[in-house]
Image (cartoon, rainbow, N blue to C red; front, side, top):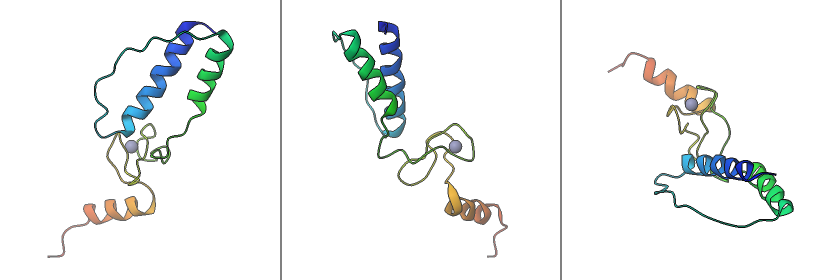
Length: 96
Ligand SMILES: [Zn+2]
């Protein structure tokens, strides 16, 4: 386990968390010393972590993540049956 793998795992983790936070703030540098065994365990822990605010992959754009309102953090589309109903309602001509 080389430092670049740990740095990469931490940066991927931070990007996933920041995408779910409304105002994540500015990143700060962090320096830690880890044994190879602890570094390996940390990378595995970061990669397997699932944030409770993360409700899966967006089926509209395919890359974004769904927040607790089941709205995509990338494309802004609502997901699932509710999202389908919203999109159908918005695309329908107004009956007013
Ligand atoms: Zn999306």
